[in-house]
Structures are given as structure tokens and as C-alpha cells.
Amino acid sequence: MDKYNFNKEVSRAGTYSVQYEGTKAVFGADGLAPFWIADMDIEIASPIADAMKARIDNGIFGYTFWQNPKFYEPIKHWWKSRFDISLADEEISYAPSVLYTVGETVRQHSDSGDSVILTTPSYNAFLGLLENNDRQLAECPFIEDENGFSFDFEKFQTLCERDDVKAYIHCNPHNPTGKIWLKSEMERIREICLENNVYLISDEIHMDFVRPKESFVSMVELMGEDDPVLVTTGLGKAFNLASIPHSYFITRDRAFRKKLGRVIGAHGLGAANSLALAAIEAAYTECADWIDALNEHLDGNLQMVEDYINAHMSEWLSFKKPAATYLAWISFEPSGLDDDEVQKALVEIGGIAVSPGKMYDVGKNQHFRFNVASNRERVLEGLKRIHKTFEEITKTTEG
Ligand SMILES: Cc1ncc(COP(=O)(O)O)c(C=O)c1O
Image (cartoon, rainbow, N blue to C red; front, side):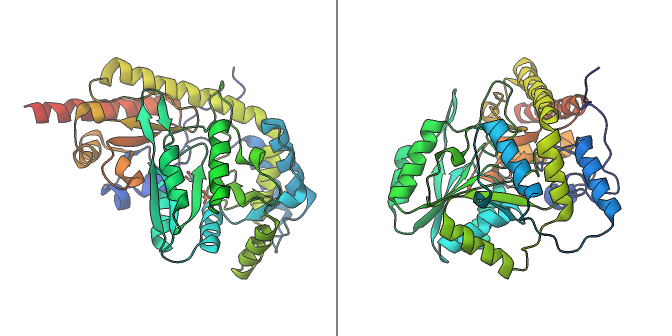
């Protein structure tokens, strides 16, 4: 028997889960089969649960320092053993969340009305973050072809040269496309940002989800001393800890590291989440084989999605297994159907909640994002709901 059972059924009843209980607010209906927000229907690894339980048994939850070896050493071990990167303690800082760190870095390096570059499609929270902070979107759309998503360097260069453009939010692996950036692409991006005084923020929260034969290169690998570059990440995705808020960032920009630390303190957010510290230590020292096994499971799920679409839905959908993440970014361009029509049908006919493509873009998109981080049977059930939706909707439109 396999050491880990990722096909176990889990229940989120009574947990106020956004995935299940948020469908009414987002999709206008209760009780949909949810495959949208990026968290997993998979139980956390048992060493993490044990470490958090032991911390709870201690019974004391006073203010907690993160500046200690139990924070630094597991992180350094993980980065060395997973990515062959050696970090120094002073390069690593704790922060309340990845999105907080991205937002604060944007706020500190730009003024109201300035522009920030995003590749589109983009993680929807980045779009919201710019809007809510009165920053303009400088859009660098991916070019999609049969080989996947490529970066428009010419467009990027032009955007970086603009006076109003102050920062670029790089997402690697990329949500929602699942792209892993090549080292050569990242070298060029870093060079263009540095030449044009554009602050480079790399969100690497999905770094641990790569297909078994792929490898991930972190922007940390390219970071020079005092470079205006910051990498932010955490265990919220890989170890399914989104409701245990925490994150950490890595930068060699000493002046900004100090400044960001002060701003976090000024917001009253300087103390660490003690359960998160326990989880980080357990995950990064005891759960490497768990994440490897999980990646095998997710690879199987994504392969099933690709095979099912090719076998049963290729007249309407196209999809290629991504190099990273547990998110299937599925195109319905072949169907010729409209975004709103498809979204309505997925809810009303399929009874399924998948994230609509236009959430990740500024206009129409003709994709949806299907989260496959579940037991395999549940993913198959989701595919059948999508199948039924397209079967019926195309009947209606043809007839
Ligand atoms: C690219 C990316 N960054 C950040 C987050 C959220 O991170 P946090 O909860 O630590 O703010 C997500 C969650 O889906 C994400 O996909």
C-alpha cells in the first residue's frame, strides 16, 4: 500500500470553508461541487498535525519571536535540499502573508496612480491589489501557442521604460497558467528591471508543486547583493495551510529588508504565528517525501484531465498538463462559446464552481481554472459535470 493516501475522502463540514461555503457569494448558488479557490481537499501531512498539536498542548500562545534557529534552519534546509540554494539567516524574514508582502512592497516602491506590470492572465488577487491600492495595471499579456505560454519581452521592455511603471509582480510558478519560468527568461527579466529601476517582486508560493520531471528555478538564484529584488513564499499552498496565516520573504536588498520589517512592525504585525512556526519546522524537516508523493498524485490527476478532455471533449475544450501547480487552465476557445454563457451553464447545468477566466484578465478570456487538488474520484466527478455542461449547452446552441 502507498505510504500516503491522497484519495481519502475529506469533509469540510463546519469549517466555514470558502471553497464550499463561498459559492453562493461568488457563483450565486449554494451546494455547487467546488473546484475553484486554490486550496486542497487533502489532509495535511501528519508530522505537521502532530507538531501543531504538540504546540497546542503547551498551552501558551504569547507573543512569539520568529528570529530563532527553529525558523531559519528548516527554511535553509528546504532551500538547500530542494533547490540547491544556500541562504543566510539575515536574508530570510517572516511576514504575515504572501499577498501582504506583495502589497506592501508595491506600496513602498510606488505612489498612488503609478503603474505595476502583471502578466495576464494573472492571479486575480494581484489585479484586485492594484485596484484597491490605486495603482494602474501595466499589462504584459502572455503569448499562447501550442507550446504553452511565452513572455513578450519586447512589450515588457517598453513597459519598463515608462516613467510611471515602478514594479513588476513576477509569479513563478505562474497562477493560473502553471508555467515555470526558464532561467534564461528570468535573467533577461531581472536585467530589464534593474536597468529601468523597476522593483522586481517574485511570488513563488507555488514553488513546491512541480511535475515530477520538471524543475523549478527561484529568482533567489539570480539575486545579487543589494539587488532591488524580493522573493515571497510560504507553505499555504504546498502544505495546505492557507488558514494558518504566515509567509516569509527572501531579499538581499538590505535597505528594503530593514524598511519592510519596520513597516510590518508599524502595522502591529511583527510577532509570528506560533502554530505556523511549528508547521514550518515540521514540514521543512519531515515532509519532503510527502510533497513528492503528492506531486505524483497531482500529476496523475492532471494527466487524467488531459486524457479525458482529449477523449471526450476535444471539440469544445483544449488543455495541456502544466509544468507546475495543481490548477488546470482549460481553454474553451474551440467551442466558440462566450465567457458568460459558459460560466452560467457550468453553474446551472453542471452544478460546478470553477474559476471563470475573466476573473484573471481584463476582458474576455475563454478559459476556466479547474483545481485538481482532491482525491481522483472527485476530480473525475468534476470532469463529468463539465462534460455534461458542454454537451447540453452545445445542444441548446445548435438546436
Ligand atoms: C500566486 C499566489 N500568491 C499568493 C497567494 C495567497 O497567499 P497568502 O494567503 O499567503 O497571502 C495565492 C493563493 O492562491 C497565490 O496563488
